[in-house]
Image (cartoon, rainbow, N blue to C red; front, top):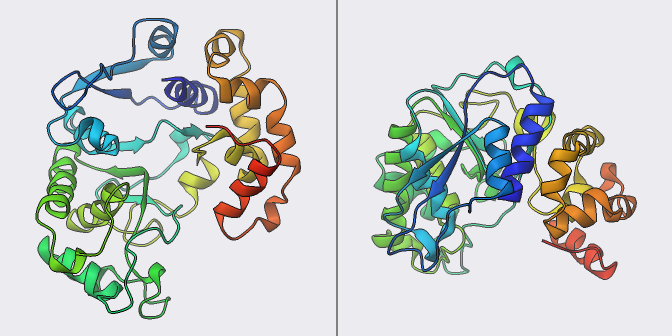
Length: 315
């Protein structure tokens, strides 16, 4: 809930001319949640409302506590008609959204990902076999999804996204495609997935199938947004405060800090320890000084390890 407040604050501060609706999709209590998953009444909820957020309920029918990443699938069912962009709460808006030219009829998603899934085994199947089987199950053709700039069986050749943001023209249709792909993978997977772990990767395994089914693709390609807009000039998916300060460009840090400076925002955000330590008590500057943004380690794990050694890792 503190992450949602920071998202809303950065949206209002850095995109003041944007006139769309800000919807916080909120899972409701039910048999799939052992505790109440709603934002409690209090300063966080009040501030979200003050920042113009509409808190919209949805029911958890398939995922819930066992797979909370499923919220981003099931929450789509609560959205109103019309074009949408979904963002994880651990995201900050860093530029004016009103300036963007997006073709929502061509869905796209975040390319800020590593080689996390699938994990082809020595005796097969390979990437072609795994992704080919999945796309075939959903009526698609693997050949239509390939980035042929990369060689055969290089992971970047295959349609794969981070689910930190995605967009489309019709949330109900996107929800149906995303949910159907996720349930197929979880409950009735093709044989090619026999050796593959699905937790926590289920949403990211299903997302390419939904985007391809809806006629989209990679940003800058078949997806209807230019490359480097989200996860670049206009947003940052920070995931953990130490990673934000270690890796984000200067304009993103400036945008986050400016949005979190007003007293009404600060009073709420500082109750969350990572925000208090990194935004307000100097740990962010210490983490930032450890790295050269123009020459970051190739693997994120190396960044995390360095931060841990310096006593600067916190989530």
